[in-house]
Length: 481
Image 1 (cartoon, rainbow, N blue to C red):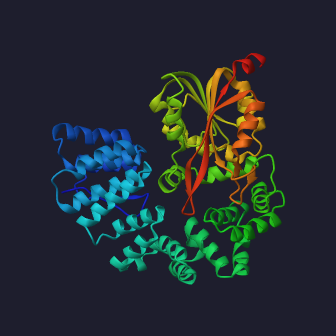
Image 2: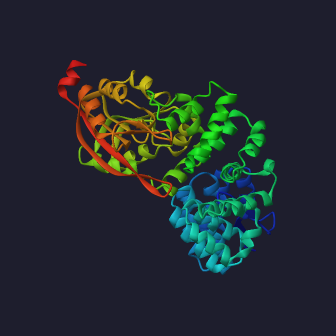
Image 3: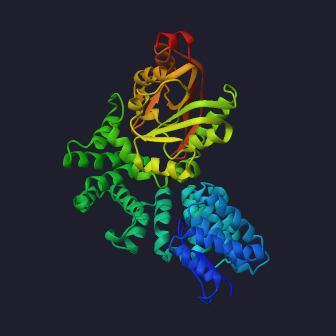
């Protein structure tokens, strides 16, 4: 009997089998559930060596690789499985799991195509509709979400559908409807974090601030900040400020709340507090790449590497990635250059763990970038994508970079572009002007080779403009150092 592997909602798989326990695939399935992935894969591979077109073995091998955190290899196996001549329902299951693997690779559009192919084969499968709904929410396709409910009304009754449906209703201006959706499905204690954050925002938008403050009394500082950060990320600054101020009232030394209040009031400090940046990225580590790349269209690492290919030889010596995050830039560099040593540093332990899992770095350091740079020398290339947005005046960074570079070394980075002077935005991020970049580079002995505007990322349906900058350390500056 065929192996029945199904998906529930986005980011999870359900595997059920109705086969004899003596069947090798049953053994492989049990091993996968025990996270003995190598042994589970070996069983599938042995079966495929005898019969390459064994759908059950191919499909399960793809799911095992997906659970093992190898989405690229999972995609390869699941694409093969989905192309085999099997009954439509089994092909649909392979396509659904392929959609999950593509999501892990931040290939959201392709994931949507895969789940829609699965739905064409099994149009009544609730789990597929939920996966599609979550993908549409990730892509902010609000009209498509409305159409999805009209085509499959059962979504109105499924608890797992209520968060994306509520967010879509809010985006259409239907605040009361959105709040009713969330309040109808579960108690506050049972809500997922994103649904709880959405509900908090809706309470403020409905003018029920006092209710929200009463309900939030039991929350600790990190939970209250998560609600405020969600509101800020959704572009609802006034609502976010209500909670940041409440957070600061309860915890007067809270660095994150103080920073966001300063941002709203336009008070420019030297940079965002390290604790704020660390906590922000720790809280987003698991979903960082899916959100930034898949949802917000972030391509700065790829674009920067394309520019560097025009300036650097194919083989590089020592390279540093400041604020390396989950390793997007490091992987992009490794794909295009042969690098002797690639070093990454970041404040967030959660992001560094993601970079470690993805691979590509020779060394990863849990450290603030200025402290790390102070111990470096003779670097051929230093990069910093989307990290200097949390630093105001770039003078200390430029000087530290100049001291750490070797002769003719390059400093390549991206920042958000300011329409005027240096400013701290309500998002909590800094925007830098071209004049500021040129002035601070010159003072540090760095020559700006290029400073160009480019589409950095989506934010609230609009593209944020960035500056992509490449500087070179002059020979005279290097000799003086």
